[in-house]
Length: 251
Length: 268
Ligand SMILES: Nc1ncnc2c1ncn2[C@@H]1O[C@H](COP(=O)(O)OP(=O)(O)OP(=O)(O)O)[C@@H](O)[C@H]1O
Ligand SMILES: [Mg+2]
Image (cartoon, rainbow over all chains, first blue to last red; front, side, top):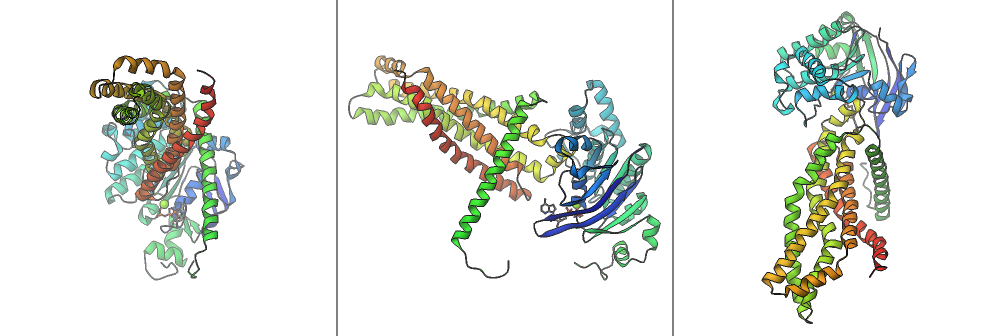
């Protein structure tokens, strides 16, 4: 089975701006963990630190007893091979069509016959409902289709950890439900997969999350199940969940 | 930040120098990583060929037009100069020497810089601000090797060829204008040209153009790779790349020429 990710005391500043002020979070294996929080609280920064795209100022991220923030570049590459990431704006390569985008990580890391590769990529495309659209260029897709293609690209190498950065922001309600379901079924059909979803969509989070954590002012101020979120008296969580203007969260 | 402070020229100069030194350090580190990326596997030949097509093939027409008209205008200008002391027979040899040694490499590079250096900066800059470079990295792919190595390699290989094309077309241009338009006697014209122009002049120019290709490609990639902040940032990166490369080409030219010059003095 997969392994937990244990984040402790993670800090990150950009110049004078302190974005993460000591994040503690346990991401249990084989589950979907959602991190919620307002726009600009450092959710994307947290994901980029997890992937090793940014170096934290302090703290640790331990997977299977190894602190990945202390690894050299070479070991970090090995760790990255176990992760897949769906970027906030899909980040598809616009020099390639959709099929090639999804084939790309496989081509780079595995020696496969062209026929086997096609089977693999078509399966990934089919799982996100894009089988008919492989020949299109990214700019010919709608926002929702781009997100789905990005999910297929992140999944195609069968990672142990799948990170989603706001997978449903900017999608219509039906497409949102579809992507949420995609995250859930991907999780349920992939043994040992650990998913971490960043979101500020409370409704979706309640639907799919096994565990919910809230990031506020650079720290995790709440952790629990969907039920815990519904019933907690925590004023910050209440305000966020109910979307009220009055409360501890101010502009 | 908010306190009103008088502008201090010494401080400003200091800040500028620090920033430039830091920037240059970043450039050196980036370029080293790219060169290592050229040498070290995996070799992505398909990307290299694609960039060679872009740098070479697609620059061919502008290089030929520039070469032809440079040769032609220099025929007219040197006819004016040499006509003053009745040495018009020297037009061919002088202009062709200048073409091969100086005008070919420098003008080719400046033209290609406008096309290729700017394209590299814009492409990589767009990939940076749309997180495509992060995506590469998240797939455990070294983005400097993947993006910069084939581009720099292609410029290194194609610039000397473009420079040779420029030399050739320029020579045809000057010959045509001198002998057909200005009525210079073809006999001494070609004779002197053969006598004065040495293969080393051509090789030296092509070697210089390889350096310039390296400069314009690496600066373009570096600026794009470090672009920040949306479309505006990409635009800024592109402008800075083209201007910096253009200046760098002329500066580097002087020093390479100084180094190459003694090598050609010994012959005769
Ligand atoms: N590379 C960077 N350089 C400087 N500041 C940055 C950088 N990346 C992020 N920041 C800053 O860190 C803060 C958090 O950014 P982040 O993108 O993580 O927010 P977010 O929680 O993902 O927001 P959203 O929900 O809108 O995506 C922002 O104030 C941002 O300006
Ligand atoms: Mg974000």
